[in-house]
Image (cartoon, rainbow over all chains, first blue to last red; front, side, top):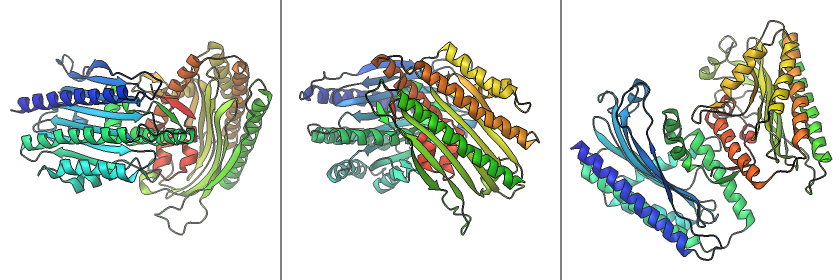
Length: 288
Length: 288
């Protein structure tokens, strides 16, 4: 039963990856005002490294990075992964059901980070994942990081995520929105990373199909809403001063990801794939 | 007695700052091949924020940042600070004599981070500090981060620091060099940050004047050796490919400072001055 759920979740993450890559490539193709060529995703796969404490362990899974450098997206990554293995005793205590499962875990997910070229197009992040130990659960979220916050954009993005939550009884929009604001915050700057979105974790309502249906809709809501925002601002001319503000804003993004983001620091400290984890870092940044 | 030592150390850090700023400005002035204007340091002072757990605390000290954007140095910061206060119980246990002094501490230091414009001129870092709780001690070091490691540069830099150590019985060059290599290392990349130098901490031999004399010589050795390296490579032309390699290398510098550097993470988590702490971050960086 659990195996079947894992397969379904992993298949969905791969399908959503294909949809997103197609959408983002279409945006590249239609942006013919730019003298630069349209970007295309390049896919690179990786295998999860052996666990030193479990020598002789069989296939530990891996992932596929899709990375594009284009004329709309200066850098955009869409990563999927399906991994399994045995957590060491330190980490198994930190994860629900980790002890009960004697550290055995399975995890799959999709992660998107978009850094557009235009400072008027917001950067964005979306991630959904399923993790299984002695039981399975979902986590994820989506959030927006504009350099120049725009009321309509934020309202549109929040409304799309609210709609995704409101059609699923297992989701709690207000809680997920507050969780996102709390999570994507830089205490040392006393600054939010962006304008928020939703964040959720350990979603296991008891009805796996209902949880999964919600997680699918988070991905689809992000796909729709973010595509709309990109198209809305893509054709607006921008200047050097706006570009400079964008490069500085991206520095805050780096500070958050390296100082506070649990996915990044946990991944780097547990032998995750460095290139896949750090694909979130912006293509060009300044700290004046 | 301790007060007199604190005053002497703080006065030295300010004097060394003046010397370094003069040297670096002279390098700017003599580099007349560049069409850009010579840079000059701009100084900004800051006061240490009040400690919420010790309301009504008197003057907690502060510091002065000297920052230059020039034609030799794309960004170079020389910071000094003299602060005091009461550590909260969590932090006082982590610091020698912190408990015995009931958390009262005094600290002064100088910190230099140089990011040259030319990819052929190594980036460099130097820091020395005195900290006092129920007793006083010194810490610090100097290290070099070239984009294109050069054997002569590394030998020259290491020899200068070795000479500084070898003329002081209180110093142990081999131990400090190994400490530096261990400290400035990125485990997730399995990569050294640069080519090393020296790193030392909790230096309190029992002869304060001897320790202080060594610490002064570390600063002077850095000043001499780094000035020489900059002058050696400054006039060599460089190309876009080398520049790109430098911007990527700088990304590793950011990763180290935000993921691992204790000074940075400790400073940001204990309400240090954000602008002064993050002055170490490079002016322009790429993560391709």
